[in-house]
Amino acid sequence: MKVINKISDIVYSIEKILAFILALTMLVAMVGGFLFRYVLKNPLLWSDEFAIFCLIWITFIGGSMVLKEKTSPTITFLIDLVPQQFKKYFYIVSNLVLLAFVAYVFYLAFNWIRMPNILVQTSTAMNMPKIYFYLSIPISFAFSTIHVVNNTIQSFKGEDNGEGSTVQ
Image 1 (tube, rainbow, N blue to C red):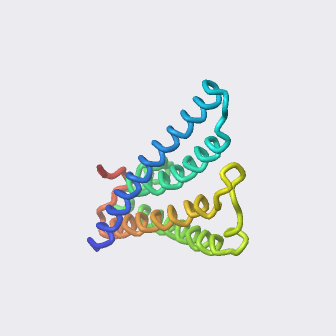
Image 2 (tube, rainbow, N blue to C red):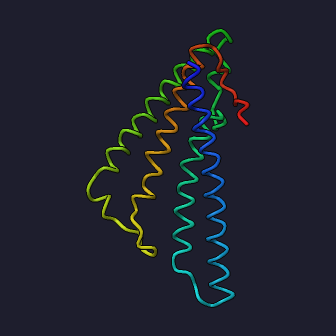
Image 3 (cartoon, rainbow, N blue to C red):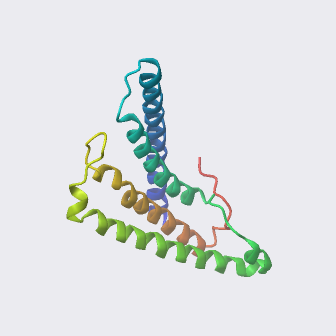
């Protein structure tokens, strides 16, 4: 299943680029908002809203990236009690549960985003369609599903020891 691993790596590369661009854009919007408000005494009404929407995208994309890197916080007190030869099964079960969760949220988000009332909503300050911001949910959960499928396959193959990966 090297194909899914390659897809996961490509998605992760896209996520890194998106996170960087969004963080930079958020920084520019916030600094611009500050300068216009306090230096030029002519506030940008849209800068705060735009920075918030960038933060929303970064949060969801970052959540997916954490799944790829396997660096999410974990509680290991149960796994620490289990003999080493059975730990593999705990990782398999936890990945299957996580896969069910992210796939289900992706399914819900995909159905939600297609509702007619979502398409007509606009943001307050920018008057921009909110669909662009709402898309962060199904896109990030689609990415998460890819990463968790890859992690689950690695668990079945015995390549997953539950520790963070060495993704660069």
